[in-house]
Image (cartoon, rainbow, N blue to C red; front, side, top):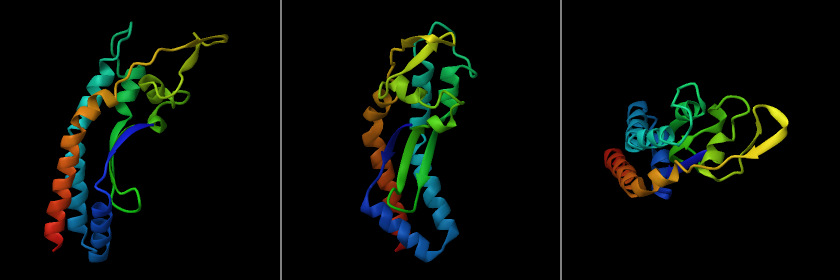
Length: 158
């Protein structure tokens, strides 16, 4: 799983605890929605970067790159130690035997496969980084957006 999280640390955990104590479903819903909205601009960046990975075949929604595009999502957690927003290309959402493809394409894990299914002949595939090269430059803006959401909800709680 390739991902990047936007957290504001203790502030987010504190707000999450306060929201749970308040037991106000409307505010909780708005908080999750606004956090998701802060991360939403990253998803098209990552998906377009995946589509631009060089290949001898044209892009297809059923192909490897198409499966990776489908596995790209936003995860919002407002409880627990890992409270925050994450953009992920989730290997668990990939088809069987392709679970490690996102890591392999990014270059964080070695990517080998049999040549046309021949288990006697294996090849190491070249990585094509697609995630961090588009997310890192925009991360500061994402953190600012998440901080604005936290500030807004803090103001509403008080």
